Length: 436
Ligand SMILES: NC(=O)c1ccc[n+]([C@@H]2O[C@H](COP(=O)([O-])OP(=O)(O)OC[C@H]3O[C@@H](n4cnc5c(N)ncnc54)[C@H](O)[C@@H]3O)[C@@H](O)[C@H]2O)c1
Picture (cartoon, rainbow, N blue to C red):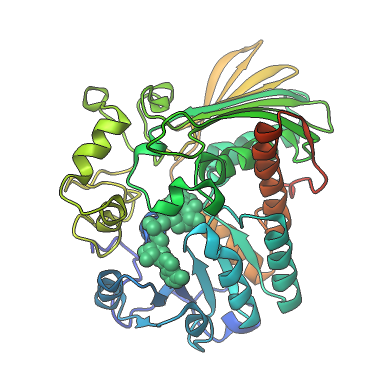
């Protein structure tokens, strides 16, 4: 694996001592020693962040895919565990990153909490409100910190937009329009990802991002949701699209739309910058379905095609420290933009704000201007910053279990609204932590 300057990968390597890490478990170690549950796609995307950040070190992992474990031993001289429970109970692990499929999040978070380990868990928090509440209680009782990430509400331009709103620069938020067109449904998938009952479809996987962003920008307290879902390809029998209207307690309202059926590419609206912040070639556009068919031709199944692209797989290409790691074509593109989640416009009383791949564009009476935001040397650094500050006790996390439970309540209500044809009231909403 390429090693960026200051990288902490490799056998026995250790990053610089970190004065921020002061919790009981962490103070015994100069770096946060992370155990990884699930070495798949999400891990592949977070890996450049872990490798480039000297405050953390990957020391152990658990995954049924032998090729991923083999690679983890090669890259990090890490310990491999046969079960997530054993990983959580490893005394050399300070904290656990849970990147297993949705349906395992609740069980694995509770295991980590029971072992007294801090948790970074991928979105969505869980698939039911009861599981979200169980996880919230487990981490509270254990006195450990849980952050749900990565989610695109961590993107620097989204956070900066929230700060502009919090400072009241352009008055109150009145309307938010968020939309994203992608090929989500036609990327190689595990069977569960196409089965709504097991967390499949765009609402759990992509709505979790969009709902989190919109709640953050609108102040968090959604009142209700009225939604419709699309499920129109019998070969991919799950929600591939949705449209939702959400009023908030403060009078703002939002329109959310996601279409994962793979024709129009929403990255065009972001200046042909991909979700991961990479430049895209418009001439290379192909429909999602034709891309999937070409990509799985040599595989026995789609799940195998997905695993092959993941860490340790045959088609996996290790990312450079800054590239975000989604390249599969043998090249190693460098990220030149922030990550984004499609087209978002926040209408305040005195301006429209558009978080985009290069910063926040403000459209106001004084003119149109881009407030550029510099790229961090560590990709997705906001996730590690928030988690490490929570562990150190220096800043309460925004994306904690309480916040993420409220986002899941909205996602679940969105699905219920589409099924029932009725508006669904929300009971579990909360305001975000201040970012100022
Ligand atoms: N934030 C992001 O950008 C992002 C991107 C992709 C996925 N995700 C999230 O990450 C989670 C995983 O999705 P994915 O796309 O990486 O799936 P994936 O199939 O690519 O990876 C899952 C990995 O977990 C392993 N695994 C499965 N069951 C396990 C178990 N019981 N114990 C240990 N390992 C197990 C699998 O072998 C696989 O390697 C999902 O919740 C998804 O929403 C987040």
